[in-house]
Length: 454
Image (cartoon, rainbow, N blue to C red; front, side, top):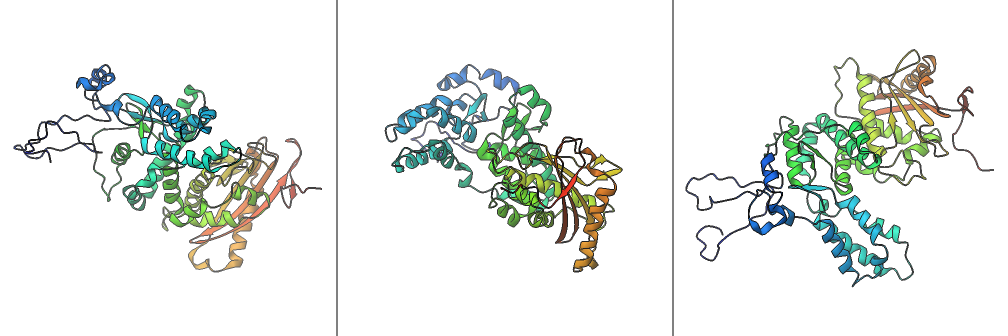
């Protein structure tokens, strides 16, 4: 196509990775690489003026402003769409904010705030269709929310990333937790300086493509691949981040898959908002035991502290399902972001408890419901002994009381102690529920934290 073509003066190739030149005598060796991620600081400085005039031809990223949409172009698309749907003009600020949250955030060349063109176009098309189908005056907020969903990410697969999960699950979990945490802090924290303090640095070691090995986990290689494929963007010149809510959904699903397995991760998205929290309020543990059993993959039969391994991996499972809204209060609107304050390996009372969570109370007050969990191991030869399971769970619940693990629940008015007997694909839990009127009053055991209506 490029070589020996008398009708071609110049060619422009679009791709993900740079073009390698392997033959000295190649007829396509006069190539200028216009990178989405500048490799040198002087490349960025040299392109500041030329990028404003793409046809000048100077500067390494002179054409990068022509890729993806900017804010003016998105607003122009909305203005033009009013020809087919006049209702958009009356709710343009709401629609623009939704587009920013879901499809904005990419850092292309030296340009911040780029929008994904496929997703924006698909969103506007779906929104026009939904608004035109409504005969009566619609609830625009709900229609905009229903139109805002992943579009671009559904056009491809994450097979290479999933292969990394299958081979190197623990390393991927640590990386995904940092990326998800940074995105959530950025969304919940309006103060940028506080955001920088609370978020961790995910460094981008090289902008050159690092080949991924299936045998050995390479964080730089995976980050570079995700950066060039659009699943990450540059946060600064030396670090990367999740760009928007559409891509956040992908990392959330991958994290859940790495922690719980494919089947349980898929099931978690089908639970109602606050499903796990509502069950705990009633003193039930069916979902909790299912999640505990799914905490698999990183446990060694030769590890001396096997109960701690279960506790640590269970903590990752809880954080995963909390991002699906299973621990959100049913009245909360922010379903996807985590509302869990974990306190693991906490010195409390006369020892260290396995896991403590501070959740929303039944009356929707943050950090007023404390959940204390203690694990006891079920050995392989006792997997089918149901009475043994009950005894081990009772030992765990007794240890919570004897060692006063609840002393760290400062300010809590509701409390749940859970003793969990856990082994290979088996779990048995015993919960005890408590309430007190004020923080200086003693705890009183109750059958349910849900107040009955008179």
